[in-house]
Length: 134
Image 1 (tube, rainbow, N blue to C red):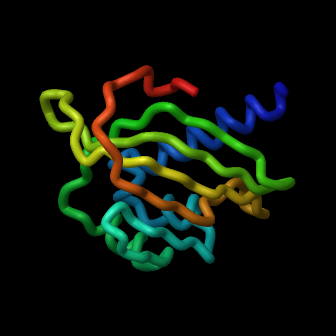
Image 2 (cartoon, rainbow, N blue to C red):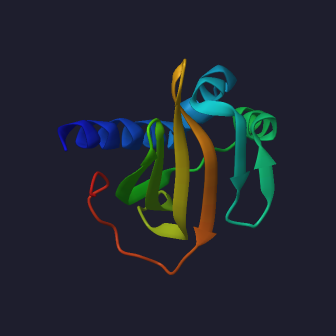
Image 3 (spheres, rainbow, N blue to C red):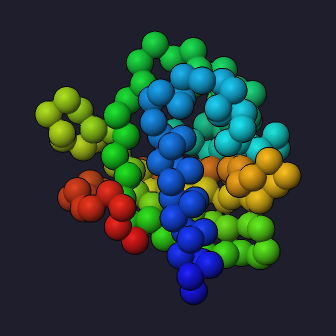
């Protein structure tokens, strides 16, 4: 269980890192965190590949403040884990909008843990909870 808790903490921290505006602006950081075969189904229903996400995020003029909470992890196989959580954009007053259920598949590679797949699905509004909650 300690190993899984440590893995949970590692993957949650990596996921939160990917949500940070200062990381999203750096193509090199994104390329380290996103697997070369990365794919995403966005909350809009659009499909993205790694190269498009890296270019889009690193060149975006505005990076939203993203709130995340209610993380859960399931080990799918050795070196592959599913992380799920809730997120929302947070405005300057702390109000949440664009509430989303998120799922990410993380794969352990020669360079460390990399996100292999991500999906966002719109959901009903939720109240803020401890961002590090499980």
